[in-house]
Length: 367
Image (cartoon, rainbow, N blue to C red; front, side, top):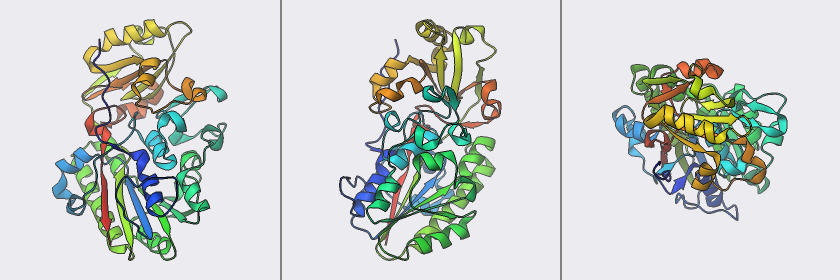
C-alpha cells in the first residue's frame, strides 16, 4: 500500500495570488491572503520554472530576489504551466477550471488537448468558460494589463485562463519595464508580467547549469527593474508556476509491453502521466504499472486522486478529463514516451509532487 498522498507544503496556493491582489485593490468577495495592504497598483511577475528551493539554493545569483520576503506558497498538481496558469488566472483549483495536465483527453471534443499548442478545433472558452480573475477585475473598474511576448497574445491558453484587460507585447526586460510604466500610470491597476526564459533553459540544460544560472541572473535584473519602476502606493509580487528537477533516470513507456497493455491513450508529461484505459481495464493497468514501476512512481486510479483533494473539488462534467490511472514520478525519474518525444528528451522536468517542483515563491516588494 502507498502512504497517503501529501498535502501542499504551504497554506497559500498559486490559486490565491490573483484573488489576493484583487481583494487588496478593493474587489469584493475575495480575501487578501498575502498581506498586500491597500495599494493603488499591483504588479505580479510570474517567473516560469522558478521553484522556491532552486531560488534558496542559488540565492547568490539572485540577490534582489533573495532580499524579498513573503508567505510560503505552493503550486497545483500536476505542477506544470497550463495547470498552474489555469489556477493563477481563474483563482480556482484544477478540478474547477478543467486544465488538468500538460496534455489530457477532452471527452466533449473527443481528442487530446495540449494547452501549450492549443488545438484549433477546441475553442478555448468552451474548454474553460468561467470568467477569469482578469475579467472580473476589469468589470469592477480595475485596469488590467498583461505584459508578455506577442506570440502569446492569442494563444489558446491566454484565451482560456488569462483573458481580460489589455495586452502589451514585450519581448525583453526593457520593453516589459516600459509597458509596466504605462500600465501603472492611471487609476487602480493590476499588471501581470510573464517571463518564460528560465523554464526553457532549465528544460534544456538543467537546473544549476551555467546556462540556467545566467538566466537566473537575468530574472533578478527583471525583478530589480520592476521594483524600481513601481509608482507610489504600489506592490510587486514575484511568483512562479512550478519548480523543476533534473531527471537522470528514464523509463520508456512505449517499449514496455506490461505498461502499454490495456491502455488506450497516454497523455500528460514525463513527470505526470494521465493513462486512459480500454473499457474495464483500469484495475489491471494500475496494478501492472505499480508492479513495473515500484518506487519509481506513485500510481493511483482516478478515484484515489479525486479523494486526495489535490485537484480541489472536481466538477462532475470534468472528471473524465482525468486519466483512469494517474502516475506521478518520484525522485529524478522521467516516464518518457514517443507521444512527446522532444519533451521526454529534456533534462529538466516538472509535473509531480516533489517539493522541488511544488514549492513556489510569493515574494513582495512595496513602495
